[in-house]
Image (cartoon, rainbow, N blue to C red):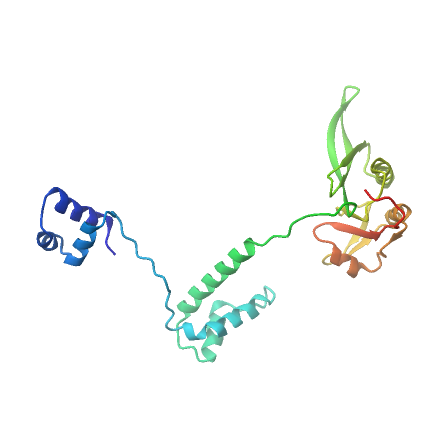
Length: 259
């Protein structure tokens, strides 16, 4: 590839010093085709971009290699094959190429999949009256000249973002029940689903994966406000609805006014 310094020397010799193309070729040891290209164009730099990457060895084996890579990707981390093992399996199928070619293709394949996965997203949207979110926070306040820590209950509607904040001295179940009672009265209705963290007042046990065992009194509170609730004994079904947070899903009576 023609470097920038050589291009500058050719342009300086031709335009500034007035040398002929033959003299420039003799002094700089370049061909006449190169000198004419530099002189006839105003570019000070030339780049070579390959439009197609040839794969003489691994080209006919791309489908087999990608099948091995996809199968290997679905395995657990402990059972995944190394690049050497993948190369050996491809060699067993008749591949005559080297390990380096398989390694380069694997790196390019992983980079392409990572860039494709990074562009995907799931929009977070809620219908009116679909869900609310409840969470606790610790705040430091001054009461009668004394600095103390209070527990603040936050209840927010996921659709309208309307919220209610109420402070309590402790984070007990009685405080949780009171916060729900006052929030539903303030919102003048109940949503069909609640989103909670794994707080101790709502969750008794956290199992493997997304399975949860909810507190009995917490379920009674939900049943009191919402008539019917999904049975927590079916932890596997309820766990499918949970993501990073514990979601208590329920069905409200049609006569209830939704927010």
